[in-house]
Image (tube, rainbow, N blue to C red; front, side, top):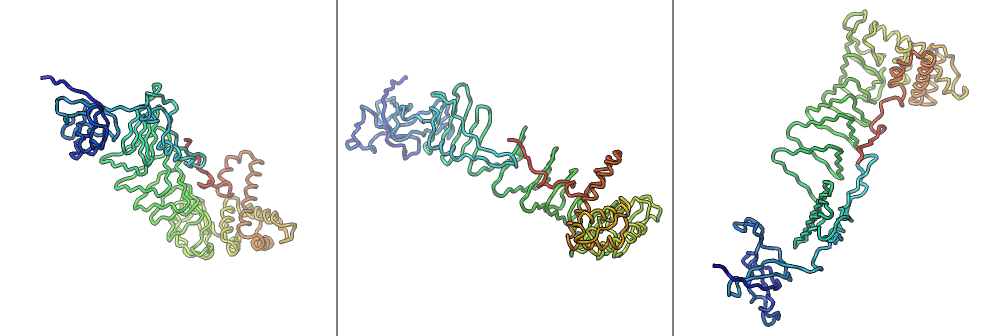
Length: 476
């Protein structure tokens, strides 16, 4: 049996279906009086909602029969003579009812999102980031399909001019947009990802994380990071690693702040300003100024160390204990015993007297004496003392003869008193550097040794710190 449907159209007066079945109150033109005094809304029939045939509409599956608003114009039909048996087929609107986004024009929401864009956010020392705008420059009617929910959630599917752009906008300003080139931009108030098994990010280009507050990572198992280039960590305050086992494999670690470790640090070479330790064990060579926690020099330190012979002519093991004038560096592969080395380069070289004035300079002159012999070391000292002297106003110039005589010692003490330890130390380094340059200029074959000579001798030739090296960062 086929039914003969009857059609009419009307306007929705209410969507508050007391049964929650998606029904709406419809005032049909030509059937119901438009005068609400004569026919109040509560006497109008509830019309059932039709949905597309692609929706199951059973057991909660498919599209919910909702979406109409009060004032929507709708086409209706009935399949019987029962005036309350009404079905809503579809709705329509006028030009003023079409969302401006369909024409590529802005709305209050899209303007607010544009206004709130992040601009010039530093991501490195030389690069800033600006949040891209949603590009609607190619949008043309009628190719941008816009859907707006009653609470203001907006979805755009724009195919204008063969493009493929999709935007989803939340009334609070969060959004996600897929641009025509496949790029995705997203902004939200809170972003939570929960992965039950695995979370994988693969980026075939630059990846930048910028966090304006705390950044926390908690890992219950192993953590592994591999960097094929340079790894730089810049911290305005302290950089702390609390771990029972932390392994870093890198040819070089640079820091211009403190490094504290309650365990053991294994490195092939360590360049630091100060080391505080209850025990220092060295299998090869210990070099540099060493002081106790009170800042005292070598003359006030006691040592109980064992030095192993790597080919010398003295017994395989020699123990040096509690010597107040113990020098601060040892080259264990030299064919000379530790005691003979102390006698030649420290005691007979009057460095114990120098240490009484400056342990830092005494340690430097000890190294220089081993490298250039005592006479070469004291020639550098004497040249530097004369260069610092202002026409013999502060002390009497000394003869450059490479001998640590009384005149040289008095001039050294006067220089410390007039110029200070750091100034004198820098002056000695500068003259020693000039000596290396002169030596290479006189004998070009010596150039192969230049970098080895000056390593650690002058400030501007040391390994640069993180701050000096800078953070060029990625190019965005």
